[in-house]
Length: 283
Image (cartoon, rainbow, N blue to C red; front, side, top):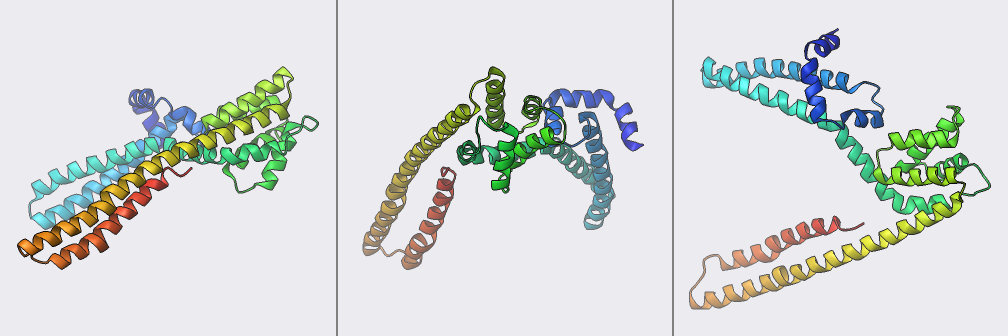
């Protein structure tokens, strides 16, 4: 009831939001939400309105009691409530794309070793859908196995052939890289070429790409380690020597505490921070 009212009353505003968030319909389709983009936006508006009301009344009471100023409490409550409801609505609109991006990153990381593994199950003598099923049974924990299993289920229970199943999955997959791989499979099947050769070539490309990533990551790690050795290790030793020499000329208050802080607090903190940065380069 409420959803229908919002859809009819605020249709121009919903259409404007969907023009801004133009990827929302396809994102909801990929996530299989089962509702239209218009309904999703309208639901977000309803929840945001309830958040606004709850925040408004609770903020008015709390701020008025603390400040003994009802006018100031009402004004501040309005500002806080608008901010909270708008922030929620903005996050609500971005949430599907964040979920898709998270799934995409996970799939594309898995493809580095999943495609070479998949090539072992592919043969031109057996239907491709059974190759998908064999891979899924052998690697059930991989996120990409869920995508492959959906292709098998479409052919096994949906009554469609592998070509149509691949076409549907290409439209629904959250990963651009996996989409390209499936499109290559589809093209190979339609052209009558060897599926085994295509998957083998794709696995070789994945291995080459992985090696290139490792090479680039090692270069970046080497650069950071050089910066670490010069700026942190040598720099801290130099600072300790300089402070010790100056303390002979003019006493420095709390010199031992300062040197202790540099060696046992500052350097470890910077080292841990650098280690976290280096983790981002590990493929």
